[in-house]
Image (tube, rainbow, N blue to C red):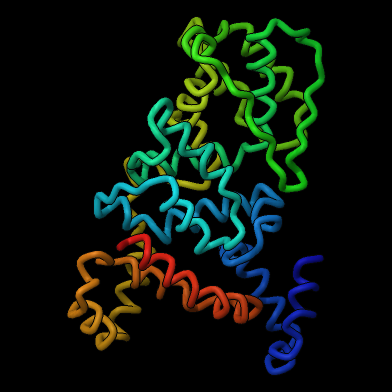
Length: 308
């Protein structure tokens, strides 16, 4: 409600043409549809579990053609895509998601869309929880008191740097049963979102020892955890979105001249279907009108540069 009122005041000149009732109708429709987070500041995008799930779903629907086309992108290129939806999205979160996929590989290595998306889902949605898990893991490696209280500090939007784990610790890891005991206690008292404890136990019951990033990889690949989060379809269905395909076909049928001009351009081979996906969100809600127009020019230029 607070954000709705703020948006109303910021766009009062536009609202005066349509009426307050229509504005609130469109605003809360967009909340239900999950499009209210588009082109918003990061503090708003990460403010609630619903906002985070909506952002994950929007990112998947906007850029799933990357996966359908078989394109492999670097961490920086994925970050550019995230910034098209959230201009101030922090690079650190993208780097952490990429690290789950790349492990010991260099950060400029290429990643598939599905691998990055599933890792990003865990890192973004459970970011505060994972910060506490990293601290617990480091404590177990160093033999610190298990009764130490871990207080997450990410609610302000600032993310702590993860502990630097030495090569020896990365190879040896920690005992899975002890690690789960600590995580079970953390889930009981954690005020932020965390994976279902039963599924965390299932992940850890299959191994005797594990590393921190091994744990994150297992979380990202666990079908039950993704289903419990509810933002994305199963991995096998990530490239399928019939509703979006139908909407795109309808839009393309209305703009044949644009399609012909894109097909004839030299850049067509580089951008086979991303331009239509941008068109898919042209029906933005009333309260986003100024923000979308302000962001579209810069974001298009940035995408072209990354493709080149």
